[in-house]
Image 1 (cartoon, rainbow, N blue to C red):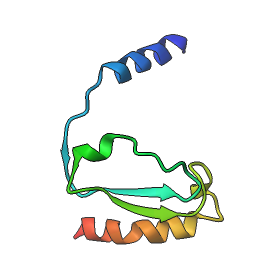
Image 2: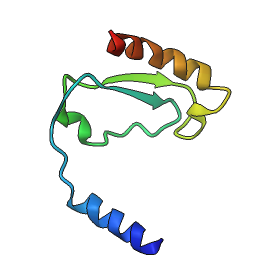
Image 3: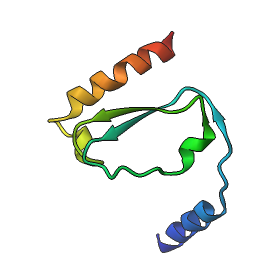
Image 4: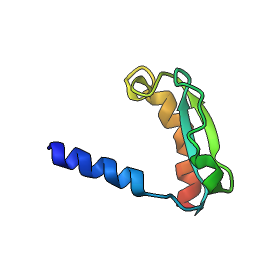
Length: 81
């Protein structure tokens, strides 16, 4: 298991992401740190950011899941055409 973790770490260190030309959405938890992960500059058109309740873990908990689903639904409908 330790070897797998090390291999994953090496892969992350060596990977250089390229640009993405596709509509994207980030469901950002209100309780999350407001940081720029750096990858947004690679996305065209710019990423749509939608605030949702909770934090990174609790945003999918029962209390926040209905609002999370409601926030995601219009993007899924649009993608389905």
